[in-house]
Length: 183
Ligand SMILES: [Zn+2]
Image: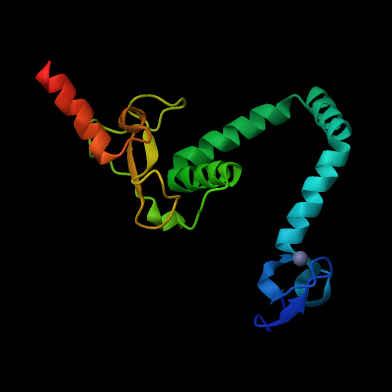
């Protein structure tokens, strides 16, 4: 336990010079207040830059490590499977977060915003957490696909239903139904 209790402290980032709450700084046990002097945003930037500058070297090292430690991949695989079995909402949340970072999308949902039902609310099929993504796998849908992962805009449906809907609007889906019904 840290004896440091001043969670309200504001600190100025040594990189961007912006005053931010201490919780916006990377945790570091031996630094003053248990946090570094570089904010999380700047730290990410530094990390990205470091990777970009040393990409080939780092990737070669990783490859070498896997070669000399063949068990690592298996350990990681087992861990991922276990995590998916035990905390499926967390895995879903994490993946969605990763996707939205890549797409530069809004992401403000909490893990508790993700509720995995036993049955797909659209197709009525039983949802099963398969190893691979299959028709009956649970899948996180953004109700309005023009919006990001924001509270109230996410629902878990089957992967098949999600694929069929894709980024269609309700109006478009109605048009498709109307068209095929009339044929
Ligand atoms: Zn900063």
